[in-house]
Amino acid sequence: MADKQEAIDRVMDGSSWNDFCDALKEAGQKVVLADTAPTDPRERAEGWRYLARLTRAALESFLEAADTRAPAFRCPVHETIKMGMDNPDNIYLAAPVNGNYTYLITGNRATVHYLGFGSQAGGYGKTNSLDTTGYLEAADMTLDDGGNFRIVASVDEQAAKDNHADWLPMAPETRLIQVRQTRLDHKNEIPANVNIERIDGPNQPRHLAAERVNEALAGAGFFVHGTSALFASWTEDFKQHINELPRFNPDKALQAGGDPNIAYYHSYFDISDDEALVIEFTPPECDFWNFQLANYWMESLDYRFFPVHLNNHMAKYNDDGSVRIVVSKTDPGEHIDNWMDTCDRNEGTMCVRWIRSKEFPQPQTRLVKLTELK
Image 1 (cartoon, rainbow, N blue to C red):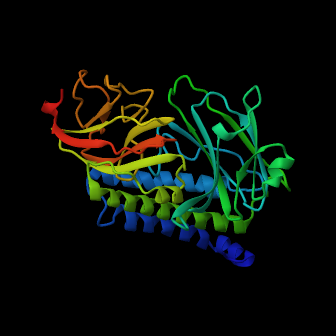
Image 2 (tube, rainbow, N blue to C red; image 1 turned 30 degrees about the vertical axis):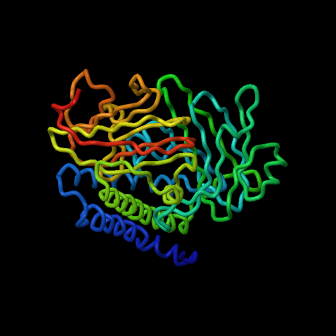
């Protein structure tokens, strides 16, 4: 990190901004234009849009909402900012924190199906990881009769006891608290209300300073390049088992900020215009499961307008409790249940999740002609 005077000089002469722009250019050259990246015009266009979206997310996180003395929860991933196989069933919230501070999180549980809080360290731009340093989910929280909760996020558990609250562990290196709210019934479930404040010292926002802008622009540039490179490398790994769905390495998922209660099954699909990928499984006993499609860059496809994801509330089951999902570029017709639209693409990424499952069956897959579907 530059010292104060050096940071001021870099802001004054434009070096901070120039380096930020150069970092974006480098991400384009080394990720979107990489030899392994897609060469299809639409996928190339998606790559540039992806970097633009990551840039929006980075500037919001590092420049606009980075004050750990006065954090607030905001939505960093949503319908038009996507990354890392974002789950269409999730509402993501995040707040910047300093692991050496103590925070009080309050709110109301409401009716959302699954609610989890994770404290995380590292960052995709610096360490290529988002290591989980503590986790707390609603099933283990103390709620009053109205569904209200109190959580203390701190290194020392005594702070939670002193404030009569549940404890979300942090480590000195913790820099982020992420909230996942997972919905089964999007139309009827009410998301939780979540607030955060620092309680062990000053909690008013700091005034803008040149050194903070210098650091923020550097962090944003690293984030765009690091995040895009990380998940592009995952996609290339998925190509080792095209059209299959093996379980993803749990440790690797946790390092990337994954929920410790989720088992992930990531892969790559590749189907011709006249083909369908049939995915079959009997869901294990679990709190939640879903399936989703995403593009090469691991951005969820546009779930606002197209059937690109399915969960245990939405799915149609066979008489024996099993599920058949059909993935194809063309709609096979009303006689086929659980059709997933590739949104006019032949290739992309896909994922299955089980939440709080004690069994981990691998979904079975087979490639068939559309005319063979019954």
